[in-house]
Image 1 (cartoon, rainbow, N blue to C red):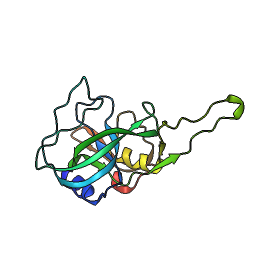
Image 2: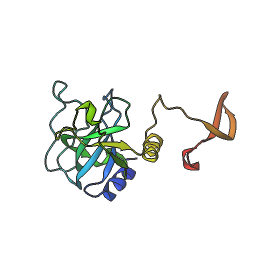
Image 3: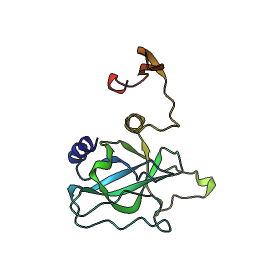
Image 4: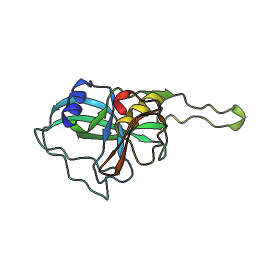
Length: 179
């Protein structure tokens, strides 16, 4: 898996959006979306250790010489939301943690209020982005969670192996490579 992730990460250029797997101990966010600032290169130094008091997300460590990307993190508007803003957090991520490349985020237009409401859009408000549904499917296919619901399209094979039933199923909405 690491080689496939390294290959994927090498295809990404600056400005691209990727989905990165967080540290195995991260409880809230199993993955994060990132804007690539610098494409894959050898890390110049070790990353600082995780600090529970100051770091909102536990990201995997990078050692000097590891293949890594420099990224800027997107943060969800609220947990479980498909709307994001680009945060100020810049991090170095190990290339093998890149799970999905070419993630599509579409810029949301700011909501304008009527003049009667006497409210204006703040100049300091952050631009919001919406995660494209096809990109979300790619992420979920690469990194399924226990909360995901899967619909069976067809049963391809069935067998009993050492008194355990085994099913090979075709998932609705996914290719044969995800059976």
